[in-house]
Length: 77
Image 1 (cartoon, rainbow, N blue to C red):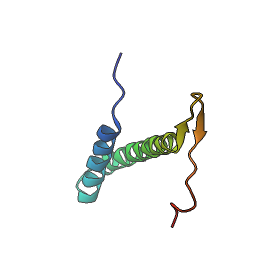
Image 2 (cartoon, rainbow, N blue to C red):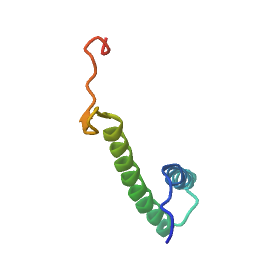
Image 3 (cartoon, rainbow, N blue to C red):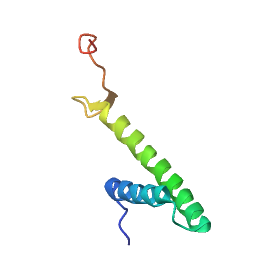
């Protein structure tokens, strides 16, 4: 069974693709493939960030139930 790549590994791969595309010295076909891979990575990373945000905005109450975290109105100032 292969391990799922970490967020950081996927982000590094996306950064590498961006750097290569910015150089502009890759053949068109390769650039298109890299661009498509970059889009896939970008979407996957965005989904992971959204999932993490949802997790971080929930708390476990004393009964073990997950509830949304509500900030006090004073905290928002």
